[in-house]
Each structure stands twice: as C-alpha cells, then as structure tokens.
Image 1: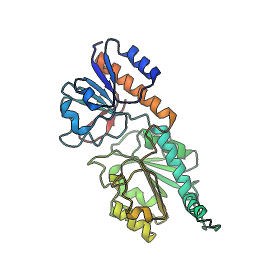
Image 2: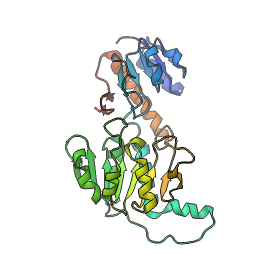
Image 3: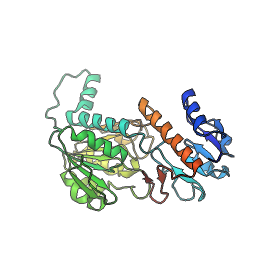
Image 4: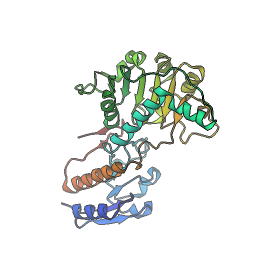
Length: 318
C-alpha cells in the first residue's frame, strides 16, 4: 500500500481519526477546514471549494461528503487528473424518511393545520387523500429514491420508478420505466417524488409542460436539486390550484429569497435543504465508512466506490 498526504475537512471525532490512522498507515493526515492546508494533499476528504481546486496541485482523489456533485462537474472546474467520488449510499435512510414524512403531511394537510394552530383557528380543512392505493412515481431510483420506494411499498402504494437507463426491475417497484417515458407516466401519479442529482441532464426535467401533465390532485416532492423544477411554473400551478401541493427541501434559487413568491404559496411545505446533511446520527457514520473505504482502495490501487462521471453528475455505484 502506498502512502499519501491526506486533508480531512470533515468533523472526524477521535474514533474516526483512530480508524483512518489504522487504515492508512504512514500517511500524513491533516485535519483542517482551511483549503490552504490541502494544497499539497494527494487526497482531500470533504467539500473543498471548487473555485480553489486549481491550487491543489498534487490532488488526485477528491472524496466528497455529499451525494450531489453538481458544483464540481461544471465545465472547467475539475482538473482532468483528479478523480471525483461522492457519498452516495450515506443519505438513503435519512432523506427517504423525510420524504415519507412530507408525503403523509401533504396528504393529511398537516402543514395547513400547523398554520391554523399559529393563528389559533379551530376549523376543519375538509377532505384529505389516502396514501393506500395511490400511485407513487419516484424519479431517480438510486440510494435515496430506492429507499423511499421501499418504505412507501409498506403503505400499499403502486410504485412506478424512473431511471435514466434500462435495468432489471427491483422487487419493491411495480413498474420501471426510463426517463424517455416520463411524459407517459406523469398523468397517472398521485405523488411525484424527485431524487435526482444536479447537472445538465436533470436541469428543468419537471418543466411547465410536464407540470401540466400532472393530476390537479397530485403532489410534488423534491429532495434532489431545485434546478430540476421550473420554479415559476410550479408557483403558477400552486397558486391556481392546478397542483394540490408540494414539499421542497431544495429550491431554485437556493437559498430562497425572503420575497420569493414560493413562500406565499399556502399549499407548499419548504425546508432549507436539511433532509440530508448530518442531522441523522447514522448519516455521518456512513459517510466516514465510505471515505475510509475509498482512501484504502486508492492507496491499494483498487477500484473506487461512487466515482462521479463529470459528464452526467451521476456516480457509478458498486
């Protein structure tokens, strides 16, 4: 096994540091949030500023702590000699549970009753919808989308999964289609859940035309990237009642400006990109596992996990 200088920008505790030291003997390991401390590093772990990558002359492996890599795959950002890997596989549990929570909240109008509570208004908001027997369309069936579809199956839904390439249908999905058939399946869905990476391949995938294809009683959930949705078209649909509601952990723009019209849509539930991050205790542990595994693989000359294709923003999962 070779040795290398490693910059770790993540908040490793003493146990994490012990594990990494044992996994990478002889390596110089620096724990710092200062990008300047990584200019000589061969391996960097964490969200190194994309605009400063050109200063890290010795960098060969950039291991991100997030699943999304869109900031790094933009043209001209990532040097050709640098391999980019992400933390796909760490966020499925946390984000899928968030998606289930907002699915229930939207269908039972819990966010609207919360608004009533603040105004001390004791009043019925009328009919609610049921998850049981509903059609759930999950666009992006990776770790996060797949975990959500598995959980929703237990509620008795009909699961339709959308992937960009044709693969074998998982058991938890009733129907699997490729992105080319999205227009065909959108009108059937009661819940449309987006779990997509950022990048040119997914930008604007939920366009004004596709929002118009959705049922007026349907709900949109987005936990991937805000750029996947035409925000103005979504606002128009929510304000006009053309769409029943939405739950958004990501927006475009982000952060969402205080005067943006989306805040004023009463039938939307917005959270500030917090479904993932490190808020769930298990998430950071999985991130550390992935990072240490890839460091060992790199030093040993073995294939890496979650290598990101710069042309698509997608990771190759093994």
